[in-house]
Image (cartoon, rainbow, N blue to C red):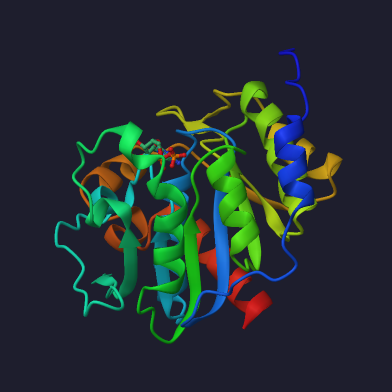
Length: 274
Ligand code: ADP
């Protein structure tokens, strides 16, 4: 069993305690839902994008905000190369597949060095939440940066979020960080809608289920913290291929087994909020 990391540092704890009582809602949307993960590479952006598309397919008006300033994925996942227009006051979101999208990747060069991005984080988040002309949306899906660090904290503290979904893979090492994520959202008063077990198994040519990364860990973690377990998403090559091609699976293959899982999540979210 990997050893549990220490709890939050004193500086982090102090910042959590200083949680401001008034958080800014994003103008132009009814609800803001954060998609979060403790680690990178577990499928958070894939989930955020496909959930946004699935919500659109069940009749909602949807925005997708890529808040991952260090590693934006949305431009590639949705194959967006154009730059947003601005009237000097507000930025216009880019519309793709009927979804209003915004990402730091639309504004900066992919090569912008990391050292320049740090100081941009807070102002970029403020710009994306207060100065984008989001229009008449039911939901904004926020693709959060991974982890429980500074950026995550700033975002959780300043923006009124109506719920968060935590995406994980079932490895023990990912679960340790998921627990930290749950504790952080609980301390900051952000409602956790539930946990998703992504890449939970693979179905081989022999029809058997292979639990490559272990079994049941995300569900057990949800139970331990009395959070809802939202379900499993299997590993499927079409998920990766469609993401790489700029047309995510829900848009490219709406009848695929995985797209149906996303539509089920979307219906659940729509009926619990609208
Ligand atoms: P994160 O946002 O957590 O860093 P990504 O969404 O970028 O992760 O996903 C990491 C990689 O895993 C991508 O190549 C993506 O296509 C792939 N991936 C995500 N979910 C699945 C899945 N269910 N089956 C197969 N590949 C997946």
